[in-house]
Image 1 (spheres, rainbow, N blue to C red):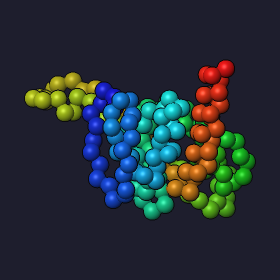
Image 2 (cartoon, rainbow, N blue to C red):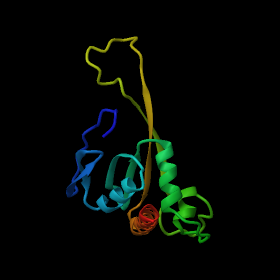
Image 3 (cartoon, rainbow, N blue to C red):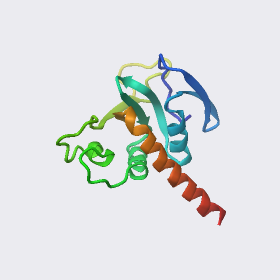
Length: 158
């Protein structure tokens, strides 16, 4: 996948195997179409879960830049209070029905699994960021990413 060590995650969801950067990876079936479109858009992910808590999906993006690229492609300006746009920014949330989006910065010392590591050895932190959002938002996110990718593919063939 990338230079970071990967962590195994137990899941209760049905998994499907996909190829990502030349390696076989397992993804929750409920997120697989969205994750594949994210990858087609050139955005790196690290882990994901179709329902990390009731009604909430989670995608861990490899970098903050990957998250921002995802948000800039997969969301569109919608002034309605319950829109993905407003819930992702935590704006105009009066009377919203669906939960707001949450983001968590996560640090991983990529030297963590170095054999024979000793106190005082160097550390090498990498920051990834998790996006937690309502499962109900997946169809709209998928539609926007598919549109972006199809336009990009059309530009490449002209």
